[in-house]
Each structure stands twice: as C-alpha cells, then as structure tokens.
Length: 274
Ligand code: G1P
Image 1 (tube, helix red, strand yellow):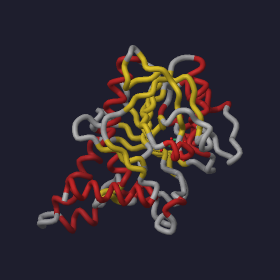
Image 2 (cartoon, rainbow, N blue to C red; image 1 turned 45 degrees about the vertical axis):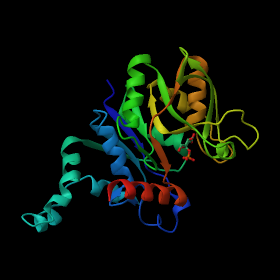
Image 3 (cartoon, protein in one colour; image 1 turned 60 degrees about the vertical axis):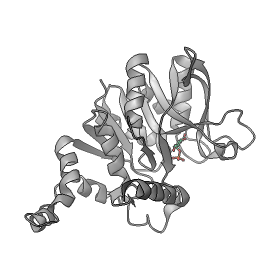
C-alpha cells in the first residue's frame, strides 16, 4: 500500500516572476484554491494521508496554509462565511504534513533525494503541483496507484505532446506492455532532448510512483551542465536494471508553471465550476 506522497516544492518559479518573488508558486491559485491544495486533494483521493513536502527558503506560506488559523477561524465562527474554511479544515484533519528544506537548488532529482528522511524505505508517490491534473472520474494519481498495484514497480505518468515541445520534458521510449496501448515498458528516457533529436513524443508529467531503490541511484547521479540532478537519469538507470513502466493517464493536465498553461487551467476550471 502506498501511504506517502512527496511534493517537491522548493523551486523558485522563475517562469512566473514577479508573482513568485515572495509567494511560493505552489500557492498561486486556480480559481480560489492554491495549486498545492489540488495536489494534496488528489493524494487524499488516492487514500494517501501522509504529505511529505520538500520546501526551501521563502516557502513558509505552505506550512501556514496546511495548519489551523485560530484568529481567522474565531473571526468567522458563527458567521455566514464559516463554511469557506470547511474544505481546507477537512484536509488538515485527514492528513499529516511533514517538511524538509532543500538547501540548494540542485534540480528535481536532488529535491526527491532531500525527501528521503520523510519517506524511508517504502514505495511512494510524487506530485509536481504545477502540473495540475483533472479527471472527472478517477484521479490521475489513483490511476497510477492502480497500475502499481498490478505491476509493483516504478511508474511514470505520460502524455503525448506536440513534437516541437519535447525539449521541455523528460521523454520516454518504450514498448507496449501486454499489448496494452496505455502502458509501456520503458526502454529509454531522456531529459529535455533537443528538438529533432527525439523519435518519441511521450512526455513524463508530474506524477510518479517510485520504488525506494531510487534514492541510492539518485545519490550517485552527477549534476548535469545546468547543475541539476535529474530524476529522469535515475529513472533511466532503474529502467535498464529492472522495470519502469509509463502509463498514459486519462484526464487533462495543465502546465501551471507557465503563464499560458495557468490561464488555460483557470479558464477550464472556471467553465466547469463557476
Ligand atoms: C520536470 C522533469 C521532467 C518532467 C517535468 C514534468 O521538469 O525534470 O522530466 O517532464 O518535470 O512537468 P521541469 O518542469 O521541472 O523542468
């Protein structure tokens, strides 16, 4: 059973400056709800109650958001606005939040390795909150967990993207597993290939199920030319040594780390929920 979800949330959010100068990008709202809360709700909907968050300097708003706010609550109690805090209070009651700070920005791989003390030696989920996923029926993380329960190995969520966007993602190559066109056994992964250098358009999006051997692999990965330790490189080693699957999820994904993607998500959620 997967009990913990890791949320790397230490990045600077440079694509969203100046908004992210003092506000963590994970706290930017789609409608009235911060991106990270959508992620936590997706984890809860997959029966995960332990939220392990990798933060950094300037991210204290995240801890405050997932904690009681006595002054605010006592102001609202008994008024017609009291219900506005119901959802977040419910989340706080159902979850345990643990935090660790990443001291240097050394990439997603390093952020995940920094989360090791919060995870221990068990298989865990990872949600990148700026990839906002929406699925009317089963949530995307829950779909991944269902796949894990069947195959018991590392799983990454993938999406087919336009060929001229492959340089923005980790890209996988693989062969369909058991004739299933939604699940691939990964043969190779490349982080952000140059345009024209990739045959595949299957991009990793921000949902992973990782077996704990990933940590020892990550420890050995050297930073790339941008001084980042890439999770993709560790996954590639895992795929060569054993089995890594890529799962084509059902639903929609919005890249909310980017202004255009954020606006599309806002419009989509507004058309559905307002
Ligand atoms: C990270 C990963 C990349 C993945 C992407 C999904 O990149 O390194 O492999 O495709 O998340 O959003 P980032 O968006 O942090 O540059």
